Length: 205
Image (cartoon, rainbow, N blue to C red):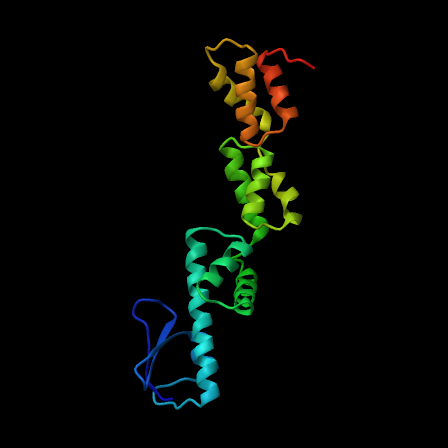
C-alpha cells in the first residue's frame, strides 16, 4: 500500500491527511506521522498498513472524545459508553480514557463536584444528587467528597417553603404537599421537618 499524498488538513490544526493508492484517505495526528515516518510515496507493508489504520482510528476517536468533552463534561463511564457507540473496542476505550485523564480532560472527581453544585443550586437535595451520581456512572468512592460541596439545604428548603406556602392556609394537607414536593427533590425528612418548623408549622411527633 503506497501513500500517494500526505498533507496537513486545512480545517483542523494538527491533523494530517494521507491519501492511499486505493483512493481511501486516513486522517492522522502529528504523532502518527512522526511515529510511522510517513511521507508521500512511502510504501507500507501489510502489517504496517494495518497498524497505521488502527492508529488513525484511535486518533479520530480521541478527537471526537475531546470535542464532546469540550461541549459537555462527562464521567469516564459516560465517555466509555459513547466511545463504544462510535465503534471503539473495550481496549481502545480504556486507552483513550486513560490518556485523557493523564492530560486532565477527564476527571471524575471534578465532574462529581460540578454535578453536586449544579443540582444543589437548582434546589435539589442529597438523594437527588446521589441518584445523579449513580446515573452518570461516577465511582461511589467520590460521592462523599462531592456531596461536601452541596449547598446548605436549609436555605434552599426555606426559599422553597416561602414560595410554596405563601398566602395559603397552613393545614395538614398543605404541609403534606409541601413536604412531598421537597422529598421528590431529594431532601431528607429530617431537613424537611426542620424547615417546616422554621416556617412556623406545628408537626406531630
